[in-house]
Image (cartoon, rainbow, N blue to C red; front, side, top):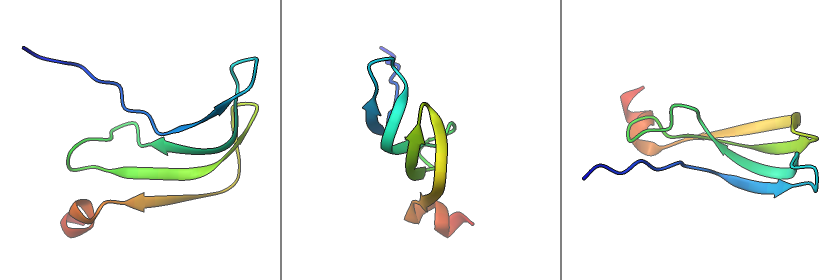
Length: 63
């Protein structure tokens, strides 16, 4: 049996379903060997300010 999952970081949505405030986003290709996590802030679903990223130890060893 095969299952399909949607991975999500997290944050807050406005009443108009717009991303707002601090968020954690996973890379679009977030897989077992590619684990990049982006941290930053949204204003009306647009990334604003400085965003940081984290690369998993497993991926750092590959790079």
